[in-house]
Length: 187
Image 1 (tube, rainbow, N blue to C red):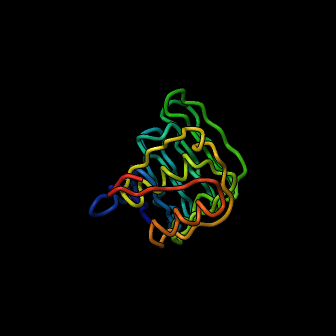
Image 2 (image 1 turned 180 degrees about the vertical axis):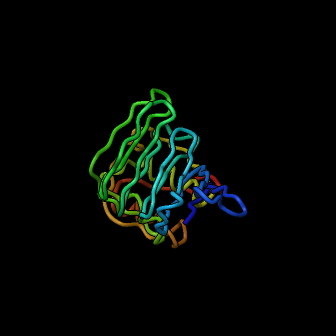
Image 3 (image 1 turned 90 degrees about the vertical axis):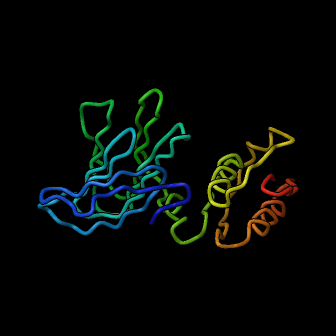
């Protein structure tokens, strides 16, 4: 699955010893196990090496942090800035800061990071600023804040992404003090 404003580059045919793809943006993979040909996902800052597993890779060029979230199986992460690989287990997320190179592995609710493949957005204390970034990518719109402090407001719940953007904005306004005005592609 490939998310909005994302691309996956792959060869016409994989080589005999490995399967390599390149991701810009966000993609979810369900990889068939093939011990003789590991599957490798390359991003701008690291590689994910797997034999068979389900995982999400998020590596947008305008995000400070890139992440790999493992749903099942096992993966090894090889950072371009580190000389070692890091293994993560199901329910864990690997993050890397694109500027400092700082890495972290933590336990997460994987559904928060993979719900987009089912056209929904699961929110767990997600700041409005992050929600807006996702909506901008998905609906190709821009947002302007008349009150910058609104960006920090936190939200919980599930938002259906296959709905009209107006419905999503209405839902956000119903559970907060926010109001939205739409002028063409600017909200």
